[in-house]
Length: 406
Image (cartoon, rainbow, N blue to C red; front, top):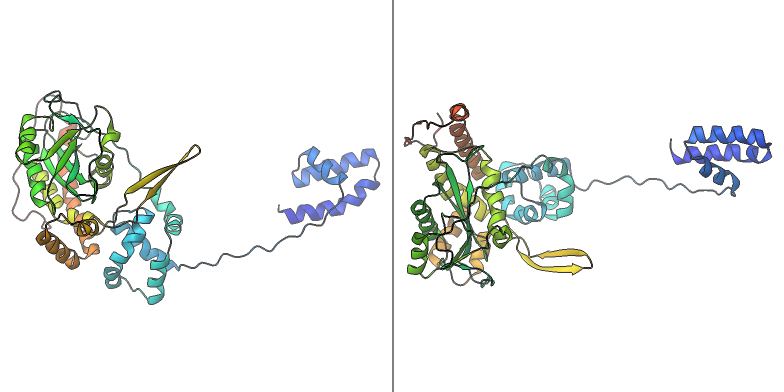
């Protein structure tokens, strides 16, 4: 029942109500409350006050600026880009459009709409699909006690205007149980450029962790100047301490049980590892090689070349509210290219590589490789459910045609 009907009904009974006796007024009032679903006191107030003419404005129909084809292409880019949030997606659209024109029938009108769409409009149009992409986060980091007195707790801020100072952490792929050996992802992110490198390691062995860090160091487009880790035993050991001393790398650690000290890497643990590989248990050499192949190639290129990131510039306190101010979203490669202390040969190679890569094909390749990793993990789920105290043996051989369709 709309307001216009209620006001017309009020006009029809208004004069009759005022001319009626007390008993008749009571019946008219009861009927008015039942028909219009008004509170009795409010109905009395309406009938006893002067009747005013209300002007009803005609409702304006919303004009849809963006066509359904534009939103459909936007959803496809959003899914292929790894479900970027609105501001990062808006910054990524110019990078993806040249390749999107080859994949979709994009007219000049659709291209103009994709470039002009705001981040708030992207949020509104993708709201329903975003609500389906929610997962939990957990970890298995345990504090180590060795060498804590020799490794300083980072209490000052690094020179964030220079690349090479990285936060490192491990993400467990143990599934429902942490018994036995399982794969962990060693995740590293540069504070200044947001460049991220990841390697898969079997177990928390100190030597294996150090080998992965050396591999990451050799693949960086800049010099590794410092690392900051948590207090896990895979980091707090003589091997990593000696490696940092020999290579003149500043080695610091966070405060125990204070994850906010490593806020940069904790965020990347979700977006670059957990969101991709989920919570399944991976514990074979076969899967280890598959993950490292993906980490070193397609996933690294996709995240560093085609996924813009933002950096927090300042926090402003407005009364009891906290306002965060971020910089303009750009890709890690674009941030690295703006730096002075980088390897020009590697930068030239990375630029050439980024221009030759199609992000849509890259996204499809990543999905295919991930499906093989998921299938390889699911083969041992039934065995793992029956696993209690005795270990089981699986085939650790890795075929040469690793990623070919069977």
